Each structure stands twice: as C-alpha cells, then as structure tokens.
Image 1 (cartoon, one colour):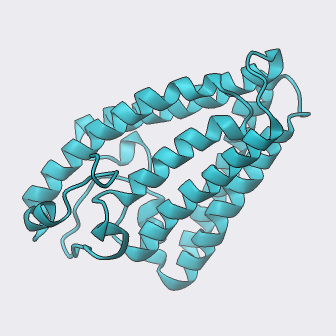
Image 2: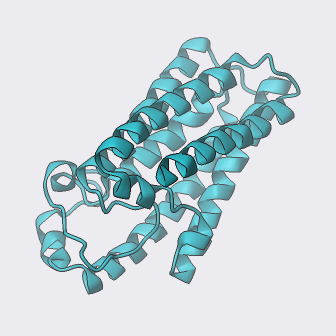
Image 3: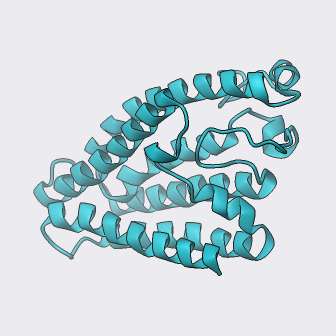
Length: 224
C-alpha cells in the first residue's frame, strides 16, 4: 500500500506539473494536442505501473526513484538535471508554438507523435518488466543479476531507446516542430549518461565486461 500511495501521488502530481507547463504558456485550455498527450502519457504509464504493483512492486519502487537527487554520482546528477530541463523546455516551447502558430503541425502528425509517445513509454516499461533492476537512477545493487536476453540481447540500453522515441514523439504530439530542437541536447545528455553508466556497470556488475563483447551496440544495432 505504501508503494501504491507513493505511485498514485507521483502520477497525479506529475500530470498537474505537465498541465501547468503546457496550458499556462499556451494561454488556453483549448489545446487538444496537450489533452491527447496527457491522456496517452497517463495510460501508457499507469497501466504498466498497476501491473508492476501486482507482480513486482520492488521494480516499481526502483522506477519511482527518479531525479537528480536520486543519483549517487555527480555526473549523473548533472546529466539528469539537463534532461529534465530539456523536457521542460520542450513542453513550454511546444505550448508557445501552439499559442503563436510558429509551426502549424497537421493533426495526423500529432497523432503519429502520440503513437510514438505510447511506444516509447511502453518500451521503457517493458524493459522494467523484463529486468526488475532497471531503475530510473544509475546504481548497482548488492544482489543484482545481469540480464542479457530479450531486448538486452539486441542493444545494451533498450530503456534509453524508449526515452529517445518519447523525446521525438512529444513535440510532435503537442503540435510543434520547434520543440524538436531539444531532442539534440537530450541525445547528448543520454550519450554522456550511457558512457558513465557503462563504466560503473563494468566495475561493479558481475559479467558485464563479457556482455559488452557479446552485445556490441548501445542503442541502435549496427550504428552505435
């Protein structure tokens, strides 16, 4: 019940914060793209969270430890702060774009963006179901086991693949092309995070050095 309460409170507060960052700069509640995005975001996170609550509450608890202060490494705190800033800026700029009509986006493109948001969030939650140690912060627990099958047999960081899809889909779902400018710095932050995370895992997680030799690609097969 404690995990349920924390999860419910986090979900409600998160949507409220998102709503403020979207509707305030948009200057209106008549912003259907924002309502659709919030609905997709809520369903894509709440349904898997309820499943985890019933089947693996420890994994859900790890997932809720998010934010700069949840990180133990200084570099990761800086990186996550940067990612949070990028997402906040993406929301605000996309809402301002809607308000002033800087880049009119067809409704079909916004629908595609919502689909990408659902895929990105769904992929990230699927990773957590597959690997219960896939926390939102960079850490290695004492009894942590290395997962090398499923999505982890394709790329080393499938959760971050979902994050990238989410980053691309969010501004499109919100009806903005200008919001896409924050994808590039977000990608840079993820690259820095991945490199630092792999150093930690190679040092502390048994079998990870061998895993690096078997799964060569971090995010995209045959690319990187």
